[in-house]
Length: 456
Image 1 (tube, rainbow, N blue to C red):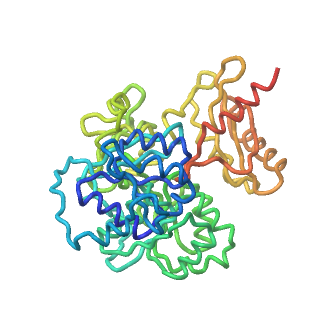
Image 2 (cartoon, one colour):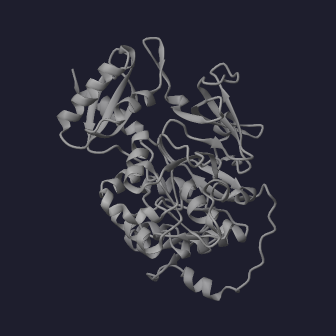
Image 3 (cartoon, rainbow, N blue to C red):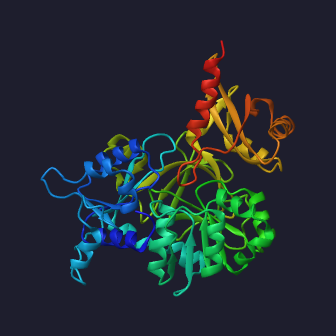
């Protein structure tokens, strides 16, 4: 279902009834959809008419469950081959008896965005819902009656909290955009609804900036801007401040906690740090030896969060590896300074040794990202023909491709020690991303691997 009031009614209704709500990305591939349908063992699928009509063959597959009962209902104009969700809602009693849930009973699942392969189901309990809106109240300062708008879709934990459940929990109003928005559509919504808080991802802020500062005038009425999902560069923060007069706050969270963990306090956003943990969120940074990292030393972040998931569905080994005694290993690297600010350093599983020394790809990305010829940059680890680990850098260009490649090479030559310089620098039209905006690094790695495979 698209992000409509019908979606919210279906989601809340499932949880209210004691079922488990699983919202799906409407841009799933057929293989991903089939994987999630089988992995979840769903007994009921609610599909909006636009999707059922587009793929009637897939819809027909799920008309009956193993008992013969209907397992598919259609929301919207019913094509006639399945029960109508709207008719079922019309027949329902105005007030239904709620399920008497215990805190640890499953309430909803979130499927990961698939940056490294097939999505995995993350199981959240009813207690997770009680945490929704903490950042809105304690950092954003959202008041009852104010409005929020998120460009991300509701199947994504970032938008599920800050564009849906968080506003409801604080008495605010969530503005929904049914379809995947572009910059022009978002500009119209901001001008039309004038929200107090705006939630997006760095990539989308870049698209908005491409409209030009003069056209961004409606954003000057927004009190708080927040970005999540990927690194928030200092250059982007300054460009947005120059265009709108406001700062962008960084928010760090994950599907495994559903709610925000670390947020930039207002007035401190500079692109150098991610922020500070919210009240009640426990944090530990550990070195590769498993001991606590010192101030200023990078460490793998473990979090203890009141909305922490129960684990991964059908993945006991991965659950055991990352969930332990109430803590979750994020596999993200952070630094903590003496003032208590956390700074994201990338993924621990991206850390690699080049010429016997540790290298974090994010360092290379940061060095090149500010160049005016380059709009985006990503580095990935690749094994060369001799079996050595090397780095490949991919840049999305703003103008001439040759100029961008030359600029990237020049910056690396001037600012990075030899062992940190990428072996390959390639230009792409745009970086491949998941529906939630995360870079699909495995696709970039495949480009170099195919190139190496073609060479004698």
